[in-house]
Length: 315
Image: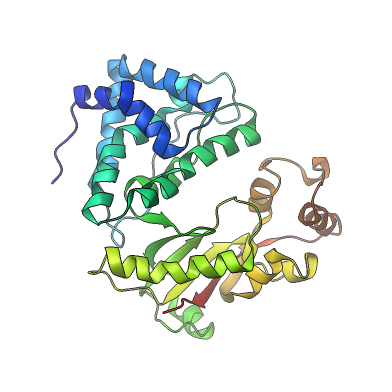
């Protein structure tokens, strides 16, 4: 069992060169650097906040690399993301806790012979999400802390245009059989995630998918190598092939065979396309082909859907 971090250890990880190292791995940009640093300094000198960070870091460390037995940790919300008056210590509590966990994450990566470039690639997702937070809410912070428990526990990796982790196929067996999935419910699959990095160019997607299985075979040989990938996203809604035909999005959607029934995806689209998750669609405006197509679809009474889909990974 991993021994608990002492507050002096945590404080050392939140100051000086250690904090700048975290900014480098997390690819933190301005104005996040200043606010992150200010929050880290305040937390490092406050015994109550520091103890909370230590407990959070220990919780993350306890799940390091446990792909199939621990998923995203359910970390309690630290603040109201819509309130710009929330203190920096609350808005950056989890990024600071992630900085306190970083040395253990990197040690786990090295223990698996995962190169430093791969560590940088996946951990830079935090800096990107800090920028997305400000685009969404107009001030700095982070509110998707559960997502990043995968990153800090060494359970997700970057493959260029896509990210992937290992998970168990949790769709009901009847849905899995009906969808023609070549593995049974409960099998190990690659969970595909789509970072916000511009176009889904087919060649880049092909390259990402081709890299996933060899990576896990090389660095996690004791785990079953994934032969099938599964994705949960509004980008798998078959309506997109009609809304934005002959687009990279339509081509990406067409790769996947659906599993089960769709669920409501309008909120996800407001969040990921417009960066306004709580907005009334009537208040949204469009600047891209996708945005125009979505708004026209909504105004005609349509809805977007979340879909689960599968595809076979290159061997």
